[in-house]
Length: 92
Image (cartoon, rainbow, N blue to C red; front, side):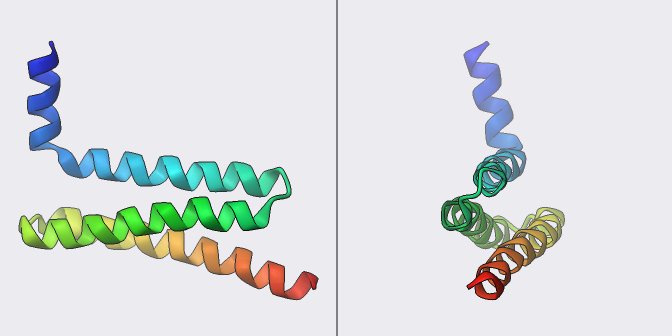
């Protein structure tokens, strides 16, 4: 069973990258819902960094469909972080 899981992760590492990034991103959304925008920016920033790394890795591995999907997710994540930062600026 462990060998099968390892083989699946090796073949479909892009899925793992998306899930990892989105997990950090969800942690940021949770922090924001609890009124902690600085923590939300940090957690979502980690998600963005993971997606940036994944974009580079997909280029290296020539996974062009994965790169296209990663760029879309990266755009959505960055837009959310910018929205939080703008909200911090207007509330001060």
